[in-house]
Length: 273
Length: 284
Image (cartoon, rainbow over all chains, first blue to last red; front, side, top):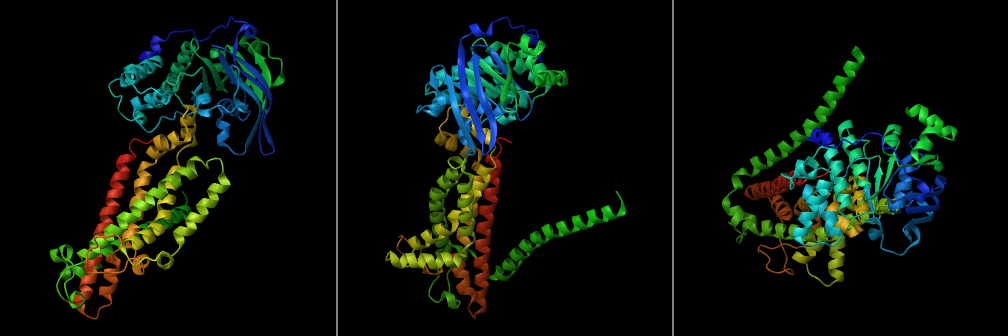
């Protein structure tokens, strides 16, 4: 089933980004972000802007702070008492780190796709409906319509339409990841935060996810954390390279990948290739 | 594999196997002895009749009063334990998830409460009963047994909740769920099989405990119709009958023990079945 879907998606693997980064309106802006875990300085003075409707790839070696940066953006750092976060994170005009606004509503502006899919312990249908209901929708027909719509958006509808009420756990890991994406899209986010979403998937499922991202960037801003250089090269419209909690290089992929300015990035390019 | 390693493997396999199978053998032996010793006294009358005059000297009747009393106390106490235990376990795992030190402290106290002998709960329940001006009654028994089994419900359910992957919390919160929505719609569902196990484990402990109800529930040959009436329990029925010098009455003690064992086995098998059924849809 997944292979046939793969055949439908025939975009070229390399997407040449032809945009000028500075002219893109930014949907997310981070200013002087610092994250500490006790004495350990995890994120050091991070400043960045994320362009709208583009795929921004956060690249860097393991432990460089990519996932912490992602968790800071949707305030999941609140779950870790040992983490101290300071700075500003603006989503449009709101500084979400220093606001009294409802945190669940802030989080709904961002869909999270984690390394390993975490479907809720309910049926496939209810997983997607869960997100829709959180938005306050109670009309059964509207929920049904949206469940189908979101499952179609992630190319899962044809594979699950006859077993919507089966447990989400019955799906393959690749299908589970797409279900989680559909569930995240159901809350109508503006940004998709993807934390190494293909790391637990086989190559076929990974390719499906990558193709989906290329489609979804028309409607959403995507921040993709990866340490796979080739994946970054295939998908990135904007690249941010991190090392030891610092952003050491950022820009459009042509510049960053073809003319790296830092020795660490050069080294990473050589190792990655 | 060299000879020494092979010998080590065999010794380890034999010792661990012996430990496991000997426990099964002991359980089998307990059930066998109880049934053999109580076989002659087991009858339908024993289950459907209350004690008549002189029952404890070999007269007619049964232990229906103790069966019903035990079920009343166990159900009542389990109900209270669920009311207190379920929110407490969710609180530890939802609101204290980022406060590891407080979490550990609460768990330590709950473990200590679990370890307190039931006679201490009985004495505490008795003091509480006198303080509140109550008589030995069904209600006093329910409260005391509830105190005894609530830590069991909390810690058993808590253990299951604590194994839920943090990624599932994060996935749920990232969707914009509040912590309450996450607790009931995600965590409770994921941990439901563990919750059933916790409840039935507590029920089994509650129905089988004698010391906690010794001073608090009292004992009567009648089936209680009110919370303020005394209630007989199976463990106490066994205790009283086993102390009798009359062999027929001692046989009845074993028959009562057999009835209690069957109830606990039914509860245990139900727990296993339900737990298996509800864990099917869980995230692995």
